[in-house]
Image (cartoon, rainbow, N blue to C red; front, side, top):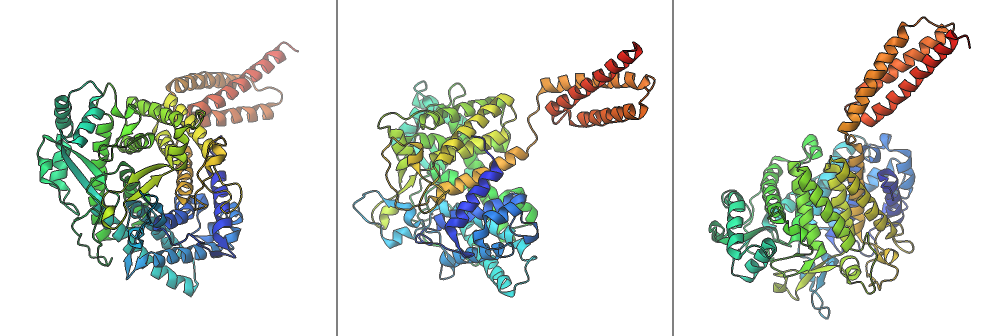
Length: 615
């Protein structure tokens, strides 16, 4: 199924309009307010495309496209849509603020490891990295939206709401950045510990001894270890053991703010900083989520619009340092052995939780994709990553058929991979976090790689894979009841599987990720097409021949219908100029234009020869 970003986004927006608006007013419904993560994801389904794609802008009613107005007619008229969106955003900020302090509760996204026990209300109110990261993206989108819309509306009530919303959004953005800094951690352990043995088996691939792995680890990460010790000081107590090169380590984000993480001084009013409860252990999933949100802080849009105040700019620099160090670390782990990457040994096994799953392989691949994009990777690295994505799609039963009682369907798409959240037992039953978005994450990373790739073969493979995964995702839309046109109906993709019915009718997590992919696909298609050197040479050869034949034709005596002949020659000149201007960027188009010119010149030559013979 071909990915058509504009049409598919319109379909998604129409479904959101049906689900979340009633008479122009935003309706949170039964599950609204129960999870800051879900509420932020839901708003981003509208706000992210509206602030990233010019054709979907809602902040200037005079430029709103007709098809956009039509699909959002449930949200009101052209002038009402942005005002109603501002009201919904203000409601979100008020709902997830307590005692003037922004809150980041995971809510019903949390589960209990022991299904017979119920989580306490205090546990459900715990902030989670998913919410910190999602809030950064939402707040930046909101600030950019308000920057334009406040100059387009004259309604006094709306302007008052905008002022309140801007203040609350800025505070929430600062609080989210502070929370992410306090959630970053470095886990240091001995090579003879159970974690060390697991990592050595992963990196050694059965070919290197523990001592060889340690020596290679020391050499590869010496500079990065020194950078962490010397530079990472805000919001974390770097363990003394990190200075010992005989110790192994991992860096990344815990699931929430780390226990005993020091508070961060900030001039912005964000209220008291809550105590952390998470054990100082990085999680692959939450690390990927954090990296996704942090990169929005230094996007071109954020910098161009000047969305960060001076205090937030300082926090952003501290987060950017962790962003770069984390990418370098996990990219180095994924490609530890050049002959056989550990990442190519699917499934990946986590060192602390001792869990293995294709989802963790995808998480490491996602960090590698971040790193490949950051450093504009070599063709070899990119090609090997393409192969990993293809294998994950096959193993995840997306591009291959499911077997009888297939465990992959259950573990990756239905119930999902369950992560025990270490440290949560301090507040009650141990909490868990389930990931059911394997397909959506695979689609997201595939499109990111496709945008990065400038190799024809790799790009074609990635585009075919993206279309296959998208076809799978599109089948999983809800077909009836609440949330028609949204996600997630796993049974539609796996009709023969026993599917566990979810208590929440709409998965805003998966819906938001599909929406995000459409924005990425839009950016991918906006790029210049990949140039083929062979096609460029052929186009240049055709241009040379065409120019020569045109010059020859212009020297011939004008025929009896000189006016028509002169018009034909001028049209040929225009096409040749167009072809020359495109030959470097679009050699295929230049080739086609020049072929047409050669055909016309040949027709003129044949007509002249026939006239000379008196035919």
